[in-house]
Length: 277
Image (cartoon, one colour):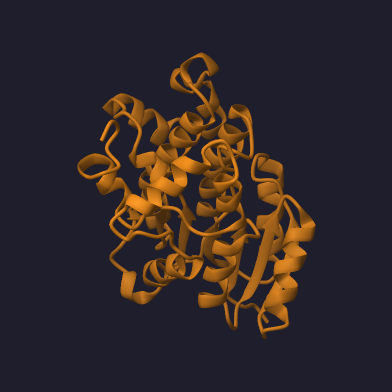
């Protein structure tokens, strides 16, 4: 019997929180580059009454993305997409960040958009970082939104000489995520489906802990200390937003990116986190 299928990429705390919130009664196919990560999350969830199938996939390769889509389709039409896969500025070099967070996300949204069920919806996890980089030109934003996926990494603004460091690469990738969501939601809409992004601030996850202990650790700790919320967020709080976006209550929301960062971006522009403040 065909079931509603939820495709989840990235076996991390945010992905699991969203899948636990929305995935009961559905077949969940959970992909991660490290199969042991997917198996660990699947075990936790299956022992709590969910139905999760772990799958090894690499977001930086189209063939791998197509493979997990095919795996998910064995159980029925894909009705939900949760993309929580990615790497952080302290975890990978510039090239890997662009290949995974920028190119891979664009391919995933494109390929799932070809098969998403009518009435379906997707959420991709972006980041506050895309909101705190120098403004791009309208043409550069359009290039990030509309360039065919296989040509994305050839764009001038994504060439190594134009990227300062891994943080800049990450910011560009997340800006691209938001622009691709805007462009792809138009195609998803042709199938009667919706697509949005969530741009979290600092959320306590293993990835964030890597950042806290990395070369920018003091920067990140200062960021959540001086944001209006005065603390980092939790994966369950991200799931709160995803629940709205992926439920019938969010039926008129598509092509949007929801910034949820405890006010860190506001403080960066207008408060104590302003550069030089």
